[in-house]
Image (cartoon, rainbow, N blue to C red; front, side, top):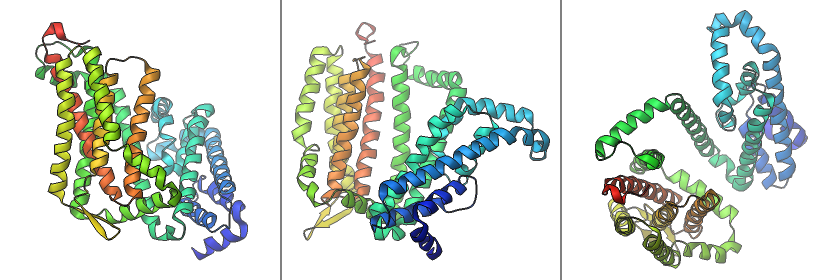
Length: 431
């Protein structure tokens, strides 16, 4: 790596451009390491942050453009002549082309995080004759995001970058693979949608025998079930990591990043963010939700009961989990916090804000209102978690665990509420 840093110091932006350009042509060059060292040089003042990202983005963009046109110009003739040697004939290529035209563009944004895959994606898109405009719309933003993320991480981590590089790459690889798997799941679901929906509806109607279908709430129940499965999977992974005591490196990296981005000048602002995770917000929000149900809801008693149950049950769940895991928290000002896993504030914020937003928007069809409310809930929960890390009262893993356990709790209760709603006498059904 001494040679890499020496060349980077001597040739700067030109080396960044050429190295990433060649890597996108499938040459075995360490692109992520190059960008991380670039971020380190930005931290040290040897390179400019904006110019570094422009050079890296231009190199990647030029590389994926050239690889696309090479695949477009020479790919199909090579497949026709030599494809049978690797079981890739014209028929197989035609099937892959049809699939890639429908779903391949969704992968272009995330393939950069998967080593080996990003090097051949441009060629493959050219071989399958994906329209260049569609290719550019997804591939170029993905390239800019990829280079910006790694250079910015190098800049934020600074001299500790080498210590954390392996951990950061580990989580980036997990992110890339998880994104690719999710895309594959969506593809399989789209291809077998009718069969999957029929099977799920058969299971659901067995439990809801009073009705022949779930009507307009079908999508809501299925979406809630998918979210529930996702959060349960994350929860099981968290518990496994907790038992294996594998949070230390993640906590160290995440805490360092938060404290590097938000310096001492953010203290007062973070105090305001922390209040978003308290009764200052929860009290009025619960009252507004209860009043909304009282005036707008058709099944007032059921929804008010669930609102009360989710809030009280969430508190009891949080208390029980923290006692069960009994994890010593950070030490701040000579005092060690106890039972911080999962975070009470993030679990409560996602429970109160998430379920209240669901009840408020359950019968509100205006999309221009729904999307800002959902984004506001996400932002509030995120700010609450960042404030916990900033003040060193909880570990980042505690914060993440709060989100995950809270997500399991509200998604489960959304499913139960909708099923019980359909079990109400028919004249009371809210469609």
